[in-house]
Length: 392
Length: 142
Figure 1 (cartoon, rainbow over the protein chains, first blue to last red):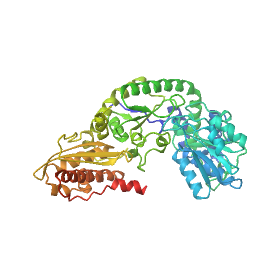
Figure 2 (cartoon, chains in turn blue, green):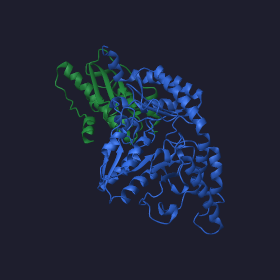
Figure 3 (cartoon, chains in turn green, brown):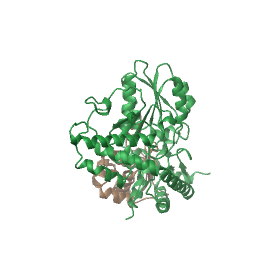
Figure 4 (spheres, one colour):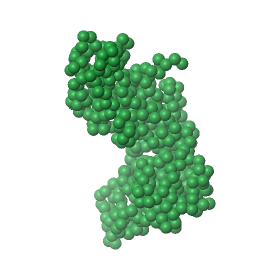
């Protein structure tokens, strides 16, 4: 059966050149990068090179890159690490209502430890108002953390505008750029951020490797105590093969970014147009233009996301949903609720996140397969029955 | 994706008894869209026996499969027998449900009870059904 992967927000396939780069470090170059003997040499050099490549991808200095295990760890380290290192100055943090769980739960854990957090609302596209950030900053504020690209609705946040405010007020700014790194151009200098989280598994690298960009001079408290790896900011032996893979993936991402972006913006437009024209009562969520390339998120009224995913899966299409039933916590998506989607309509959430290997034919196939699935489920739905009976 | 039994997948992909009964003797609608599932069950009852059962469901794979299964189970049963059908009966008939989906089977039980309750009310008779509405309680607990 034809299999089409459109869930690149969950994970991306490993680029063949990335796998090639990793293999020696799973075999002969297995040494500990800290060892002084010859076996430590290749892994040490490999890490240095990977650090340069990751730094180059985001316009940073290699010394500003801390290797971690995932985007989640990068977010934890940035938020808790900065908060605990600067709590003498104040215990107030500003964030938004559409952050990833690794940000939200890091903040919740800080709240239990006595920190205060302001969760700024967003507009219907998922944009934080930079003026609202300015108004929320107090003498106690030490950190602002706002997501760069939202994986559920694809919206790219106004980080450069927000950083003008945080720099003026002398408050640190962190951004979760896990969804954007490798997908759109990122320059930490232009964004004006003090810390930025990224993960290799989002740009055709392996799982198990992420990084935190931490601007020179910003102090953090490590979350893991131990040796002197990563300048003492993240103890524990590095996952060398994964990090080598991230380095190679960063290099390829930088090289291929313009062509991938063009390709994915084109497919995104086709899919959005086709869905909105092909199915009635379908709504695009997130910003129509300020959005991740290849990211298509919709809500289909009167039906539920998981049942659509199951039928799509039967047709070989892998997608995602933010509906209550697809979340193990059985809660409606906090992101969709924050942008003001009616709770009933959030249930019909579908997210297609396309990648470099998707084609126009893949998009056509989705557009052919989805409308009959929607119709079939609507014919089963009491909400649809009520809606068509209601006099217009 | 959730691990559903083959039986759940069969009932989800090809559900039995989908639709309405225009002149139903009892109709029960339970759940709410915020929770992610709504079940509406239609019963045709003749001389105390459920002759026909149909459903419309808004919800996940498990919600649709449990609706399909509960309609299969109650067809031909007397009201007394049908009132003994619990969510466990439905789960067993489906060869199990993932833990996070057990509430769908509870919804199926409640839809059945609600439809039977409606039958008694329409007849102007005292209803033997004590409605539970566990979904509403879940809301309160959250």
